[in-house]
Length: 102
Image (cartoon, rainbow, N blue to C red):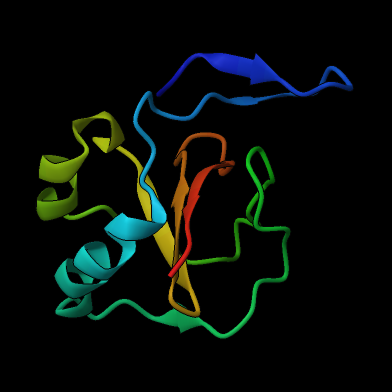
């Protein structure tokens, strides 16, 4: 995936792609993801912030090609829906690399 970065306290996490999604991307992404049978989480049992670990018990979904076409840097990443927020996750480390708010 991406190179590791560090937080201010020295913890490392997967660096986000160079062009993370923006709030204006969310409606278009949700439309493209909407036809898939992705189970949404009503709320997360983990912090929705960069570098946060997503528990392995959370089912992750592979980003569909339609999203990778919009942001090729997300190729190979997974996602989970929390409400209408799209959470992009590094499948190797299970760390959040981007949160696209609805």
